[in-house]
Length: 412
Ligand code: BES
Ligand code: ZN
Image: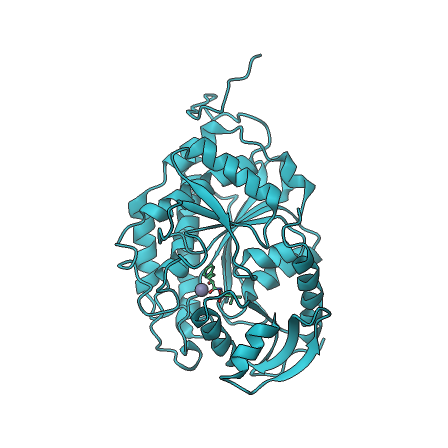
């Protein structure tokens, strides 16, 4: 395998983005052009990632994303996948999603109703203030991973079957963190919820002391995952499919953690039946409460999310929008054929204007987790409904405590 020399990286990116970035940093050798001429594979100094991130955001983000690769071969494979996906970005990924039904009012309502705004705000505050930044290559980035590992381990302490791991990566020193609750009936089927733990601001690559609180992007997603873990583990919820929660490493520098993980799952033949991404849930920038991102996601899984919203949070409004590029960790799963969805805080362009700056703090979110709580209730309902197969699974005491109107009791 042609690994990238130290200090260099292979990148797949849009031709337009490359053209814009080249105006600021010329140190790049184009290596290979994609078939359509729209996506390029290039070799660049690692610091070029910083330039790209700055250009993407300054120029409104519509010009395209980029993905970093550890080897030339990995870049070539990605190039092929990106081109196929651009031809059919909304293609359905899996027949398996069709098996998802909204028929667990007991567990879904119990977990969703348990969501605590003060817990969410506490996690967002701690994650965004305890480390000067969570940049993947700086010591504080690894310290943040350790904090998440310790927190999730504490939540899992009373559940011996639950496993919390630090997952090392080839292309970043920051490990991802994964909590697994094995399924009782179909352990080979995996329901995965994720968000990214790293943060960035322009220039962070050169400065380990850069101030990058990343409260919305994406301490909010980490808070959602932590709250879902707390509720699922404390309630005695036992998934029939395997549930995994992942705090991804190194998203901000080209989706590195999620790409390596999705690739490893694919190599292992893992059966991932649904992936939900939570990245930026704190800032209510649009008239609608929840925006389902419709590109690089699975349309059947998005329909399932709509069913969950209409059943468990009927007072909320929702709409769809596009990122226009592979903008977060759902994309690597989608690109490998796994059904993924991304529930986002606002319409694209109406999202938090402070992301990737020192002002991405909880103060910008009015010190409130009210918006994040809507996404956390959605994530909790997703976990219950996607991970339970038999309709109307009862509590351990044999009672169904469901309140949702969509549910009707068994007739026999
Ligand atoms: N949270 C953002 C993604 C995002 C930003 C989605 C604004 C929708 C609106 C994510 O952390 C991020 O910054 N992604 C990068 C791309 C990635 C491939 C490095 C981006 O959007 O520039
Ligand atoms: Zn970001």
